[in-house]
Length: 191
Image 1: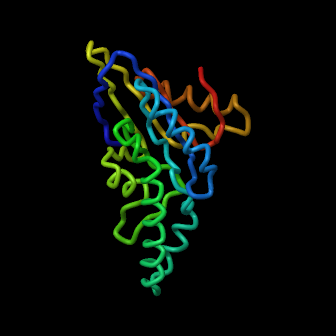
Image 2 (image 1 turned 135 degrees about the vertical axis):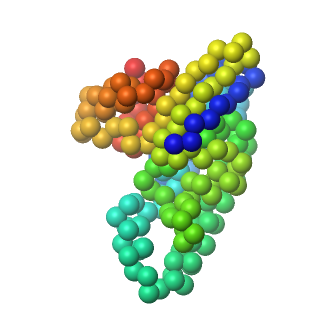
Image 3 (image 1 turned 60 degrees about the vertical axis):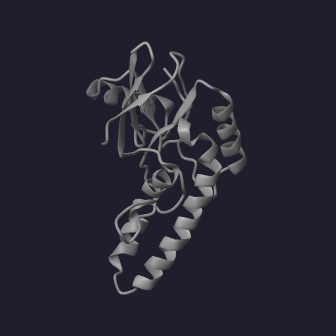
């Protein structure tokens, strides 16, 4: 976790988070519509909630790392992933000043130097990498603070919306925040 403070220029603040973009196999036209919506709304900001790319899940990464006899393949795969990150960064570039930060999901690629695709995306865009858990204090000009808690694996309490809601409520009991953002299950709910 890398807690940060983010200052907004107005007391009006709208949060339009993005989770599970799964670029490049996700629905790119919807990604571009979302970027346009964030760009056009002068009060909108976002948190990237993980799985920006659809690279490799944990078991696959562990399997690939377990085979150490072929370093050339790892470097070739690293280069392919870097190109995809650069493509996604180009799409997100118009709103980079509105991206509060980015958390890690579970579909990232781990490069041979130990960094991951979410970190590289943050580096290219010049936005904070929050790690697996984001804690953000949003400060307005009138000094009203909002605390945002963001975690990719917030749900997964079951196949139902109620299971996800219960998992979120458990997180709420553990952290003192005003807004809780969770992803991973591809369900949309707010309460």
